[in-house]
Length: 487
Image (cartoon, rainbow, N blue to C red):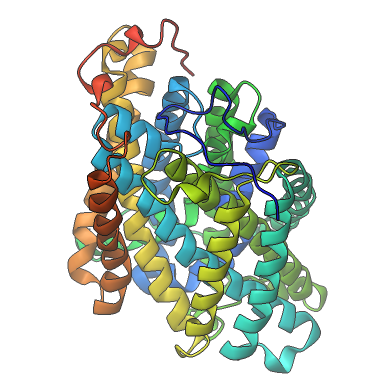
């Protein structure tokens, strides 16, 4: 397969004779990508049992109180996009504003979390496919991971084939998914077999077992929301990226917030704890059968399939674009920065991610139950998400601090919201660790710690990125950005 040669190391994006990613997305594409990245149907189907297991009836509260600081992180990304499009997104911005070592950690956290997620995310696709066509095999880890691997290979091909093809597919899949979810949210609220009546206490703190219980729920909730920032990783492939990429992420967070809140309430109202625990891998199918006997379960399976396929694509985009940026700046092998001459996509990075993921598929097929895989993966990824979102929020506060006190609006959107989001992410990271199992901490923190090896190696090799002085953290950002937009 022919590829374009390696690029020179730059911190801020492409230029000169370097190969460039295909710039063909617009604002609405960014919104669709952000929604697909958070994968509402997949998140609800695959994480509801984990959330209920962590906080019982407080699921709506966990998503509400995590959704507010997550909005702050989305605002931070919107502001950071003013610094210029970069496929590495937060990896580039954190390195420029705070320190390149922390920038590398940010990029590494995304790469490892996305790689782990692609295996965990594929399993519901395998389960849903078997539920539709070979129900007696659903729940068998070997069969589910095998079918999931096939879906993954197909998605990897489409991601390599071109961003416009991927975006068009996302429009179809995400539109059907969101429509089905809205229909079933209404059915669940109005016609469900009510186990409990709605209670405002579900939105408060009374059902949490102290701060540790809240932190456990927030960690799972962070996983629900995660993925919307793919719109920023696509900045180099988006027209008017300074506005479209960041604002697309904000709108995407708002859309999935509404869907998540509706469905956690419906789950509390219409399913018993036994139903949730006994159907941990297909909560939406169970809910669909409850609110619309017969067709409901099948329709929800379709929604989960579409959501899983969609988020596989967006996660592949995030990890391959991050590897592309890190390869371009010599913090990982420069071969990751090679592009296909016709498709304008990082095919080498895509191929490497595919091979590593298929290896993880083989391991997961021998782990045990689907529930074990999902629970450990979701919790571990939550730790990694908290790290890189927290650093991104902090970078926005530091980088735009000179603007934060110029108006009340700036204070909220350039200072307060990003700061609260950042502090919240760091808090749930620190608070959650003591309560996690050895496996969860090994996957979550151990995978992050492995990043120290390439960091030291490429620092010694003289990576310009890792030796760059973070000037934006000490000088007014207006020296680089004469005009900075706000919300």
